View 1 (cartoon, rainbow, N blue to C red):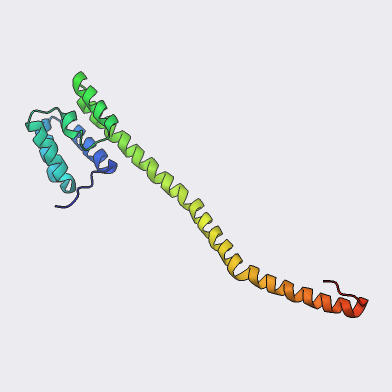
View 2: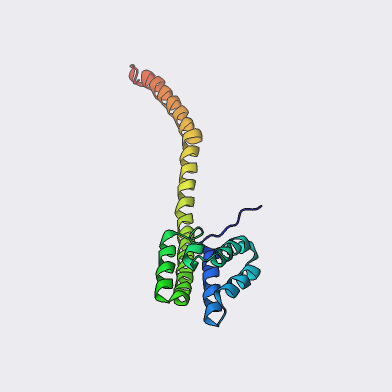
Length: 158
């Protein structure tokens, strides 16, 4: 059995779809059955939620194992106060926004990380190739200046 990836993007899509289906008049059981058909990759998770609902658990308790605690408590409060449809749509929008912000942050961090990597390559290149060459040139210049100083001034400079 393969591992199901029910990440925040998939959760956002699922919550929005369930909220829309409930808005247009689907029952919760029919909405879950439909989303199981439409979202094939998340079908095992949706089937587990549906099985827990049939066993008599609330919707919030049914999804508790698959969502973060803050979302669970939002769903629990929404069920108690009769605002499940609105809450599902808002949670879906929240997760979509969070996912988009995370992607923007990753794109923004790519450039500075690339610059740091190139700076590291430059430092390693300088220390491995350029600095040893400069040190050998300096040793040759000191030796040349020292020998010229002996001849010109009569005493060694080094």
